Length: 102
Image 1 (spheres, rainbow, N blue to C red):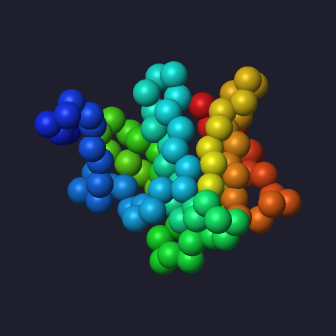
Image 2: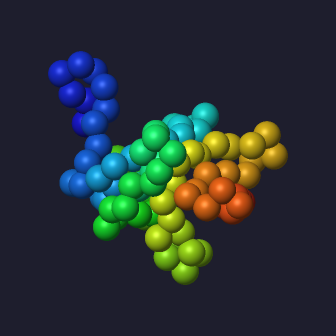
């Protein structure tokens, strides 16, 4: 719902469970991707009870399936590659999560 500034604001009432956003990406079609519990900007990671990845579905957000192993990720970056894959930067610098979600 647009706020007084004309910007869209989303929160828990829209299904977004992230208290701290570590990664945010908007696809060309307007789909919003949100990663929770991200980097604190000082070389460390926030330790919060809410982690995971959410995707917008209309004016609501849905957390990605825990069976895919995405529910306990702390995300610091989200980016879409030229080949269409979605990349998630996580707290483990040796892991790159790649999703074939279009």
